[in-house]
Amino acid sequence: IAAVLLITAIAAPPRAAAPNWHITATVAESCSCTISCPCNFGGNPNRNPCEGNRLIAITSGHYENVDLAGVSFLVTFTMREWSKIYVSDKVSDKQMAAVEALMPIAFAGFHRGMLSFSKAPITMDITEKKVKFSAPESSVEMDVMSGFGGKPVQIKNLPNPAYQDYTQYKSVTHTHSSDKAKWSHSGTNGFTSTMD
Image 1: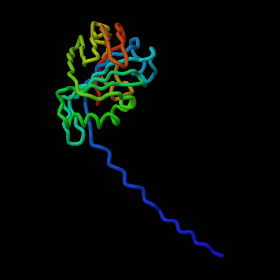
Image 2 (image 1 turned 180 degrees about the vertical axis):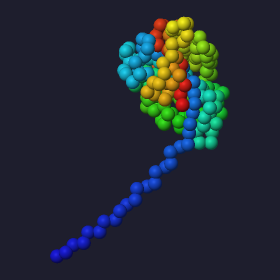
Image 3 (image 1 turned 90 degrees about the horizontal axis):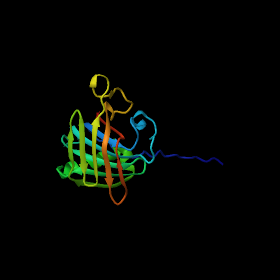
């Protein structure tokens, strides 16, 4: 008795094309780690839990056909546990949807534990000496750290594309108060960088 086995190849469904996007942004962050935060160098926090506020101010970029220049958002987080994301209340509905679509691609660590994603008023003032930014439940003020000759302490060529042109800051105040958590730190890590 001979049997013939006929195998039909089933083609996998076509994969959706990756979205077309690119952003360049100024990043400003303060966290509860001591200076300088080892996470930014590929290590683990030196204070657990690591509590932080990160401002991302997009200077140029797009997601598909949506222009994201001028869009800013603040991420409040306890590292590897949860995040709350506040997008500037000045963004359009299309920009809001584009930022939300970008979260799992460009900001997957914050997206995984995301508790909320909402519009809110965001303030920011970034100079060479001082950084201030806030959203309804969080605020940061930090001063640049001066090095040799009074110049800002800068670190080059860090392994993450979000941490280029890294300038070291020290928090004056770094706070959050919500139904999820409450913290207040001073003298902890802070930085500004360019994300591309």
